[in-house]
Amino acid sequence: MFFKRLFSRSNLELKINDGGRAAAGYKGQAGDCVVRSIAIATGISYQKIYDDLFKANEEFRNTSKTKLARSLKERADSPRTGTHRVVLKKYLKKLGWKWTPTMFIGKGCKVHLKKEELPLGTLIVSCSKHLTVVINGVLHDTSDCSRNGTRCVYGYWTK
Image (tube, rainbow, N blue to C red; front, side, top):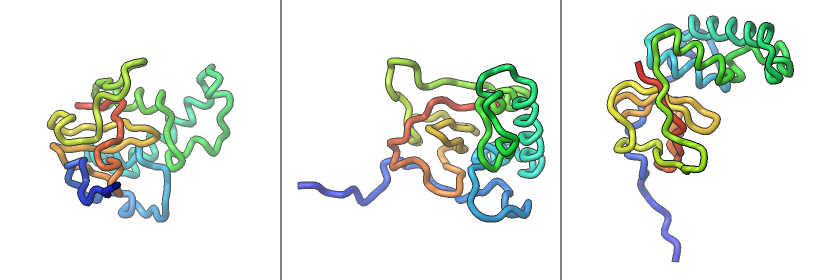
């Protein structure tokens, strides 16, 4: 017999937070989790981060000699459609954030998007194709992305 769980195993409280996206005048759906997460975690305005990442994406596309950069089109500069990991890493390091990996090749998933598996403080958390923020056990995002506590955490940024 199969019983559906009636509660979330995540135990992270959810605070709906768009990082100032609506206040900046943006509407509709977008793949801008990087901008939203950095805005929430740092307190820097959504628009400032959006503009910074737009320029950083453009610079990466135009100056990097990598195969990825050469394959990108101009429309990929918009943080609305995502930000490349290389650009994200450089930007957060510039802001003074430090990366802590939690998943390693061949080791499987050890840390999930659950309160007891994450440290206290402000974390910019990297999951599969998503970035979110957890502040002292409270998930700040536009929806519950924890997959009931089963979503794997690749690593997180801390100040």
